Length: 575
Image 1 (cartoon, helix red, strand yellow):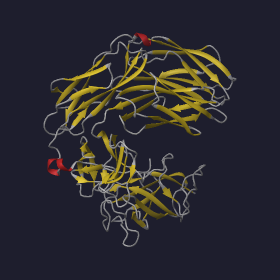
Image 2: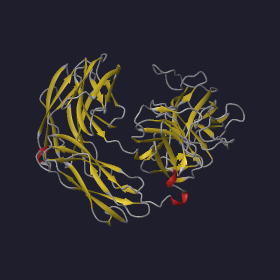
Image 3: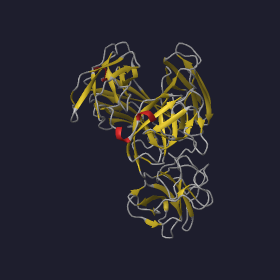
Image 4: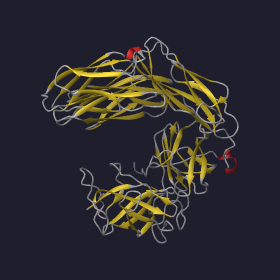
């Protein structure tokens, strides 16, 4: 994903930090962040589960665990040797009180907390399949052009599955998709395909499942296939999970409706329903294939609310119903998600450069509408501040769940601590990694093409409807956009706009641009400018001529290298 110039920021609480005390606190780690899906019988409790917590910092962990679901509970045991690593762990025993759950998929969240630990709290998502993972039936729609469709289901036991058809030929199959997770979740996929001899109409088949150690999974699954020349709607996601604090602004999500059939798909309307009544859920068609969904916590007390969005269209499989789960949380201090500090290409786990553009995710950073900073960037934006090792970052953007910032240059390379203040209330502390340079080429969001601009303002990609585009040519001047090259020469102050006249803020020494050959080899060229984009903060541009001997094609990889670093590779088209 590419750079959002309107959304960028980072954090830490000044009274707590110095480089000398970086590891003076416990630092929480969990062996897993998700369990399941776990199959449980309808009308019975599920088997107990155990995960482990351990400390990679100093001191000792003092953990508590809470749950947001009545059927899910957990407790922390005494220290013991870890089962999968060296050292001591705290076991977290998880109890599944699922006897009252109806058939279907249910998800709960455990929150593992320690007010003195960094990278706490963390959450563990637990998913159960009441009645098992094998579906009761499967219905498919395909176009009469050789198209295919499939359905994935997951079990906790190996099964034997046999597919057969009653009409239409050999159009149905079922197979193990892969090995699943270390928790022995086994994914199976039912597949259907249109055969040349199949006319439009409805065809029947079945999948017989036997041999499972979980009795409810042993069943016969009726399968229907409808071959149609009408549009066929495909929805993503299949269910929507929204969350907001009591009294905060509305939570928003989006549903994308694609056409896997023939003809033009037209959305004709949406309806919302909520369990138990209320008006907190709303939806609207925002574009030909986009539905926006909002959940308003204004008149709701903390708790979990269920609803649904029904989308009407001219598709053969209309209407489509999307379950919506809305969790309203009580107002609390701001909360940074574990692993929630990333570079602005949304690369979790990648280091962030000194002076680099970064994003921070969580909740309750502010309750009002999003606010956007102006250059020069300030330390406070809408009542929000961010500190890294006690040094104030500069803020581009702040909203309920995201802050975008510029990493302070003064923060030394290595592991750093990050904290948010909202109107004086301090968040939890999380860790992130900082490097002197961590350059990344920005992506356009279309396959692996980079944010690269031709001299006429078009993107050097194959002709694409709705996007100004044409392949680059030898001799053309290109502008390549990137982040994370660190401090420049001359240096630019934190939050300050880069100069628009000489001396410009250049990368020293000048890196080289490589056309072709992926991450090895390629045609090397020295750019005629490499430095910060004038008048902006933290955004770099590399201006280069396409060499005469550059490789030709629709997907030519491009990268940049300098002393001790190499960027990621992005694609461009050259003719």
